[in-house]
Image (cartoon, rainbow, N blue to C red):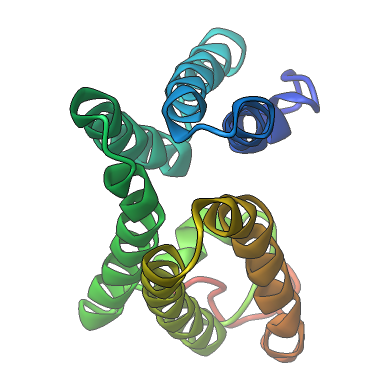
Length: 193
């Protein structure tokens, strides 16, 4: 977030579409209008980001593309399977990208988070590996949940479960991040990328 953009912009872009999805599903108990709300709110969030911040963040853009494709398929075929697969695709894609970066010697969380937290190269490698494994596990968990549970349960899991598990996992990484933290005066290069 830049200094000249309002504080509400990032949370709106990140969580506004999810809130619209949940509210619409809660009101209608139907995935079709909830999916339409998700697509519309995602487009509005990206337009707000572009208008106010003069840029579209990469992760919300990737998510928006997947939402557009799988949400569109859900509406086109009137089949909720596509929107239920969307978290699997997004989480799986994040995992593959992070593992791919590691395979090429580039811990990709460093350029994404390096401005907020400074760590040594080994720390970034370990954190990237852990998040890659986490995202792969979350993709698998979404598959289990949507294939074995009711739609109501899946919607609750999508809105609260995924977010809650991500927050808990992120907090569990604080010891690693603290152990590998560097100050600006440390002689070793912070990111290594």
